[in-house]
Amino acid sequence: MQSDFETLADDLCASIPGHEVLLLSFDGETSDFVRLNHGKVRQAGRVEQRVLNLQLVHGSRHSSAAVVLSGDHAADTSRCLATLSELRSQLPLLPEDPHLLFNAEVSSGTHVGANTLPDAADAIDEIVAAGEGLDLVGIWASGGVHQGFANSLGQRNWFTTHSFNFDWSLYHQADKASKNSYAGTEWDSDEFARTMAKARTELDVLRRPARTIEPGAYRVYLAPSAVDEITGLLSWGGFGLKALKSKRSPLLRAAEGKASFSASVTLSEHTGAGLSPDFGPSGFRKPARTTLFENGAFSQTLVSPRSGAEFGAVTTGASGREAPQSLEMEAGDLSTDDMLQSLGTGIWVNNLWYLNYSDLPACRMTGMTRFATLWVEDGEIVSPLNVMRFDDSVYRMLGEGLVGLTRERELLLSASTYGKRSTDSALLPGALIDGLRFTL
Image 1 (cartoon, rainbow, N blue to C red):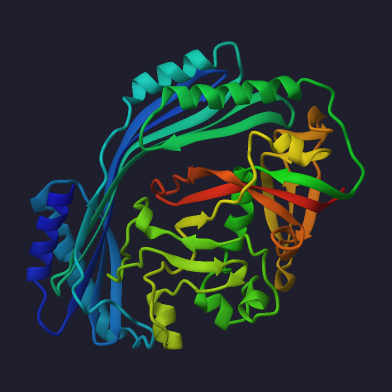
Image 2 (spheres, rainbow, N blue to C red):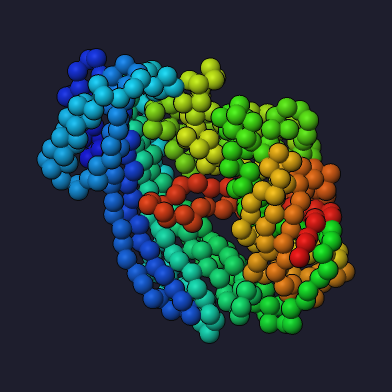
């Protein structure tokens, strides 16, 4: 796809007169998808798609459109040139945009990740064998994801990554299931076997009679997948400049120095890990690392080009959402293997669900437990818990209530396939918290 994109970009950019600028952003993938239910393959298919976004700029006016490409160079060039003609006719009718900003300094680069993926059929055979006799339900997605950028100023960027993501559950009944994911760039049969063994153990626990506990504050262990739900909601405006300047950020108090997390919490956008592209549709390159919180204190914001123009700030090349795409939390010193003993008596939470803000200025969240949430007494798992709602401030959860973070961290790749496979990821530890507040 890279050579096809670059050839098409060269032809389109050659048609642009000197008083205009053309920005091209490419998304492509070749993906295998397999849906499983009751431990059997129910649907399988392959998707190949290529989409080119064109943005034509004249002064401070700009117009854009997306073209689905066929892979036939002559046909694609003809369609894109016709689209450019339409965009050019629109420009005089559009208002000037005071917040338009694109990279005018050429900064080219290429990243092509190695393809060490398993054959999808082989992986599915292994999954089906491991789930023999169980109600295993899930979806497999694997293959190459490609993104590119080009402009008529001469900049060329390309990014390719190859990954797999198996998002699945072992289902017992009603709301009781062991939800899991195994994702990465290289399949490890031993690692998958360990993950499946853990899921089977949880399923055995879920067959016990479920317990309902009274509302109150409990000692809780949040697995990395549960921490991911919390940091994911924080990313809805929490780390972006626009939300801070408009006073709509849930982390405004931290940015103003009026609140903080525990000194053990350091969060960053780690683009240098290579799981997401280091460039955006405006051509700006992203820093290898942007520290968002350092030792509990608010540090930096993610700045999109438009926010940079609006507020006179240096852009970090962030997307328009100004949300992390490669979020990383530094590890702590607790051992996951010893976590049952560290928890003592309390709640083991593997997954949280349906999170939202109950008090956004206070960064207070509410949400539901789901799937394998377990009651633990004296370091021993006793029973599954019925669904409960938590409601607490993240400043407390990751602040005075945080006992510690685990040494081991889990790489969680986004399972989103809305429109295209996502390259977002999070590298997160588990968190042991004192006094997490649960309601009915």
